[in-house]
Image (cartoon, rainbow, N blue to C red; front, side, top):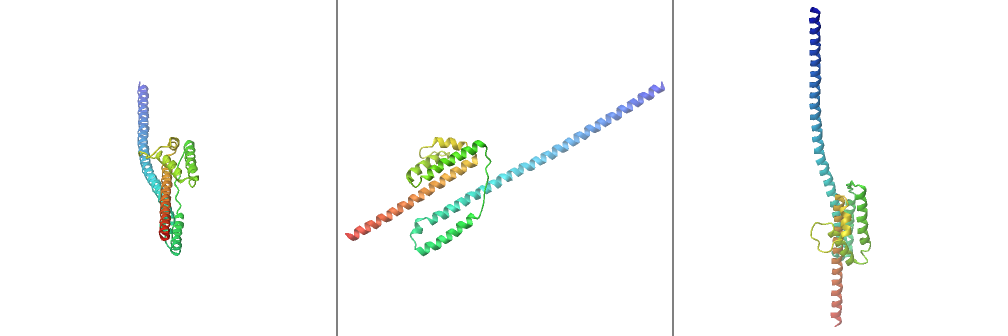
Length: 222
């Protein structure tokens, strides 16, 4: 009888000890899981903040890319402006030296934002670039026709109501490009159209000057 009580007591103690150990393991797992969740949450929050900074960094670099393009275009336009043709050769040479110096300093700044593309987007970009290049290569042959065609391409890139017809084929190609590439394609077309407009103004001014000279000469003869 006593032996039976001793055995029962020992068995009860063993069960209590086992329960305590199991409870300790459960509590340990619970605390450890909570700690891991907190740590994971903090890391995710840090990465979310870094993602915002990375996007801001890319936007700033992209803005610098655009500023470089604008500066080079402005310097080029000054060098080829009608005003430069209407000053003395010595002044023109001095101004060109300054313009070349500014252009050289601008070109020393290298800014490049790489666009992540899949295979389809890469193919679409190459196709869109080729379509623009084909028009640019024939620019000198027929300026007016090139302007009309470039305007139809530009109309395919803008959400505004276009002033003329839209190149539907080009539009479908551009839609397949990455968003950043779509913006760059639109900017390139804007630059080309501005250059054509400036060229047309220069040609108009030149023709006007020639006409004035002819009229002056005719008046003297009369």
